[in-house]
Image 1: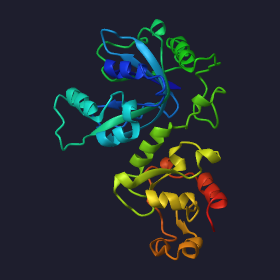
Image 2: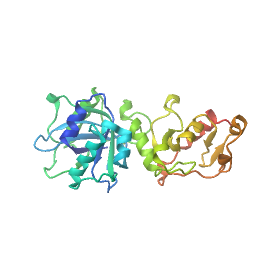
Image 3: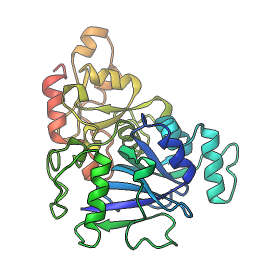
Image 4: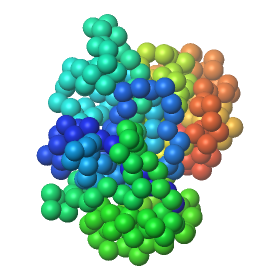
Length: 310
């Protein structure tokens, strides 16, 4: 199991620490040049302030990452970006890039999504972790099985969770169900906002069924809704145009385990139209590039059995 300690903008930290109701945040990076593959979803993510404060001030659990335009990050996360407005966010990114963002520019930034966030009370903030050099400007990862760091991070996890949990850092992180008996430690669960962001990014802002490439009308759809036992997981998601999302949720459209479009006969019976969808029946839908990001068979089968009007 690994943990990551990200160096945070002090303004970002103070803004969010004053808003305890915000428990899912975007730890954004001004450059979107590199993918973040250091942590697996669900592993611990902590926040350390810049010098001279230089303290570990809070943490949570890594959901996933994506490369988003500034406008997209604001639309999905709002003040959970650690700023009060998109204008302030653009100005701060420009300062870090040392080049102001033009009025018509909408640059791509790196977004690291952290859920179940907790900022520590002032009397419980911690010194920096072991071996954290002063010249580290983005962050550092740690293997929690290392004896030299395990006690430090065990204390931080107890503080983040607000409860005592038996932790064995030698256990594999990726296994089904809650880890160590606490649902917040479930490895694949995303936050609600990060679910929207990673589905948008994985499908390259294109509707999986229609191919529509107009982001304002696209929505992250759950295959198995949370209200029916589903989870905020990328492999339980599809990016759909808003009207297609409604038809999918009402069972007029479905996707089989081989990723082929299914169209219910009820669409024509109930509304006397739907030719554009019948013309696509049996065709492969648009899919994310990585196999691990594609819809999970069990969720597609559940939708066909429980929702689709076959």
